Image (cartoon, rainbow, N blue to C red; front, side, top):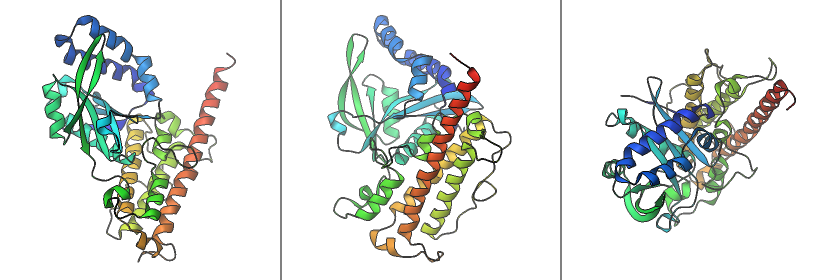
Length: 353
């Protein structure tokens, strides 16, 4: 069974809140005091709480859908972990819920794979999470996904202080320095990668988000809107950014590549219909192109940065990487401006408070 994994939007808040509460009760209600469960549910679930989380730039929320129905969701959190994961370049899997109907049908593994990809895009070297020591099904699943026991932490359920196992797994790649090891520093390449993707809990030099951060929480209607007929939309900017990541990667890797999946080149057209499913698919395309570009850049070395690729004319490998990082920053700024114009337009339509 194939699930569609997409970024969550604010409109998902009621459904995700209901799923989280239902799954939490399924897991914990029979083995804990009712008062403790109710106190936890009241303080951690609900549409307004979920909507606030979806608007939090330090959280990344992914939704798994099967035949248009929400089957599960996961949330990554950039925050400090317990001492047993300190110094690992980690990001927490703060929530991972799959509805009981979809247990054992492959949805959880597909969602976890997407979580790992999102963590890599965020520059993390390690995934970690806490799981109740009396939840053998979840523990077995996480171990199948490559997680290993690294310690314990306290989990407070109402008035009950319980013990969680802390599990962690390394990611296949992160920044170039992590690939090569500290004994082989590549300072110029590491700085270039930093410009493309800052490490967890660090921001870009310009203080703004990455392209993926900028489109997080944007709806299809907002993405498709143009301030005037002759201007570009957030959707078109998103595809344009993805297209040039693809183009630079072709020069870096020097291997046959499939054609970019959207037409025309440079500024691919918005799809018709421009609905939420199509928008989620194009955000996923941007995420994939960003991920494979980072892999291609991480495979370079400082010595190659001054060479011109065989398919190039004058730009060196280093100049191509620096250029695509600047391209990201420029067009992300335009996306941020379009978001602000959309908000002001909505406020004007609403009229005086």
